[in-house]
Image (cartoon, rainbow, N blue to C red; front, side):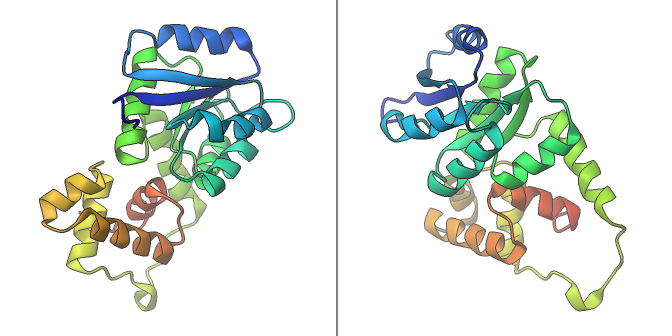
Length: 219
């Protein structure tokens, strides 16, 4: 979040009328400021260094560079920026793939402005936003990927501190909130999260949550 206590948002969509409609519908939330618009993913990436958004609302189907490629580029080059996919594609295959690419949330274009606001707030606070649609798709994706076969040799063992941090991440607490609850520094919390992400082979807090759910690592 910016020093002026508002969240800077960019929107990328090749339909100007839709972009303007979203911006207009969000004017009631005075601590959300749209700082940039883009017609495609390439323009979005080019404008990011100057606009410095905290959050990007990104369509999937765009000319030149689509939302999938744009999300991958942002996750790699601007990891502090949260990408929320805002699309008409209600296809389960897109949800899991976009989360794997680094998206922090996935919304349909029929979403109410109040939920878009909540998604923006949540991704800034916790790094991700999970609505019932995404939860259902990802849980289904995880359970249908393969049948579970117990294997004691590959059992995942967490320290008490790692388990507590992972549990609080799944409860959507921020690093500073976790540090206060556990009596450790925010830097230590981030170090534990980074260690868990590397260990589990995931890229962000969303990945940690779903890995924990899939492997039943929290109570």
